[in-house]
Image (cartoon, rainbow, N blue to C red; front, side, top):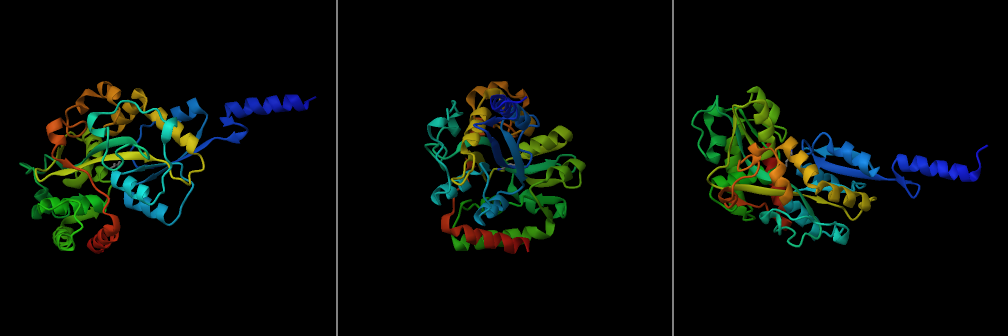
Length: 340
Ligand code: N2P
């Protein structure tokens, strides 16, 4: 017969093996960019921690922020670009990560990111650059310039990231203007450029790699790691960081104040910082990770390569995307008018 004591012990054993602590299910609701993790990361973490992960992906930061803004809650852990971390900090939306986190040594340029210099509210996840992925068999002598994405001969062979900060930022770079401009006149000029570009654009999309791999598109405004993934499937694909300057991004892990399971989020962040865990993610995605001890472990082709870990002289020509504050809606409207 099952005594009460046996029942409790049985429940406890069951609970432990199913990953419960204190009788409650341990859960992590994780919202990440698409193609931004290794195949084994979530499963390995679940096995080791006993936490069940509900994993959801977005393909554009604008979409993720819109979702958070209309009050979709329940996420414990979100990957966000630096300017968005800043914006969330400004609105007091983030949980301070505090002493539960043991920060490893980071690469020098990740130590004090401008959006959160003391790293109080964000933990760096992956970093990379915005550039042009192109097919060297279709385009010979590609210029190291953003003007490639305005080339008439590439009509309908181009995709542009569906991300206003990148698309408008690139138009500003091309014009020699501040890529974080909030000047209405400058933004109008950027809009004109983008309207000139529009007839050449096959699609505005952030999932640009398949078309590029298949040769349906010949050039794409894209992100380094995704282009690295594309190059693995099609060696004709190359990457340009234009001379006019480009973006460096440090996408970061943040925990919303409203998170139902902040402790599970912190556990994942500490797990991610293990050199082998983030190495696997870098090797799978092509995106560099912030952990200094992980760099010697990643695939050597990614080192001193603009697609993975660019050399220092390249990094010095890159800019961060900054929070544009109250001008966010001006950027939003401009982008909606371009895509209309
Ligand atoms: C992954 C997206 C990369 C992020 N597909 C660019 N910030």
